[in-house]
Length: 252
Image (cartoon, rainbow, N blue to C red):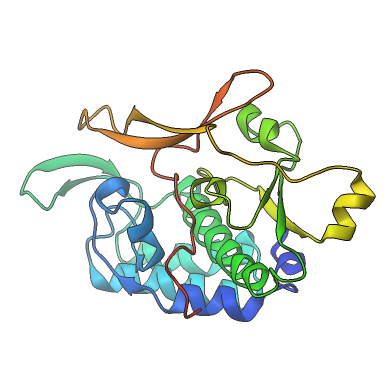
């Protein structure tokens, strides 16, 4: 993940406000809340106690506000979760009364919780900043990290330029999946001329396909798909990520 201390020099106030305005929600599976619902609700799958959810949220809030690294975040939170018994594999009764062996806290889960909440909050703050400046920088460029950890599909989106109000951004404004590190740069007319390029138009390139959400549930839900006009290859966000993290949040 991109280093937080560098990221949050850009738009910390909006990112923090986005996170703090969320209401808490108890869920069993990550897909119990779908896409835009995550924009207004903070949840951690299988954190079925309010105190556990509050502990995780408090640590995330502190990490976001103070620009803490993952190592600092987990060092503070892990002992609390272990002390309260929310750690490792356990038999837990779900919301329907069914007993199931599940993974509660782990280092992998903490890293996912941290990266998802940091990235979505930061990107929502970045979106707010960019929207406030569309009169000067109306063109947005998709930027992928382009290292060995970058998804090939995200790398293929690298360099795409569309106006801020193009429908593309309703589904492809990052993050576009678990631990996605992509971002968007805002460009002016001068920037486009300097790059010797033009803004595109996604008309006819976006469609919807049904994708499997969970093997356990067997449920399928629609995902927005972008068709590369040069290769014909179809590119989609991870299932459940086909939305803009800040959509509908005009008050951040």
